Image 1 (cartoon, helix red, strand yellow):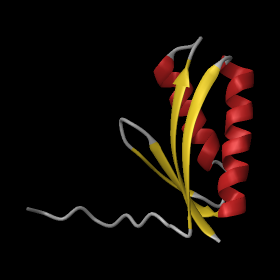
Image 2 (cartoon, one colour):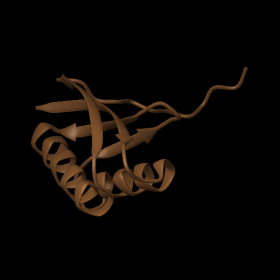
Image 3 (cartoon, helix red, strand yellow):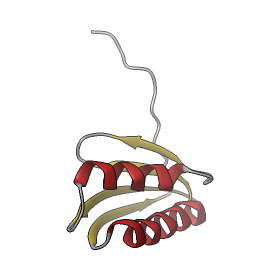
Image 4 (cartoon, helix red, strand yellow):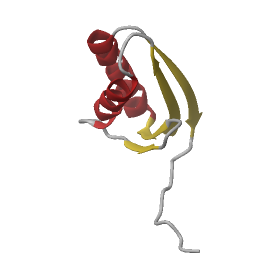
Length: 89
């Protein structure tokens, strides 16, 4: 089953930007998922087992490297993010 997850990470004890960027890199590195980021969240898409595995590994790694954090996640089954070229106005 395909799945999308919208993730927002809130570091409590570390520098925000470097912690969030490392988390995003860990999410996509070596996983069968795609990611789209913006200033508010990261949307992760792929097979459900790959999405859950990527989130688990990235969060555990981030906890070990940067300490306490809060992860807010929304999971949408049977959904795949489709990102195409930006349309010109």
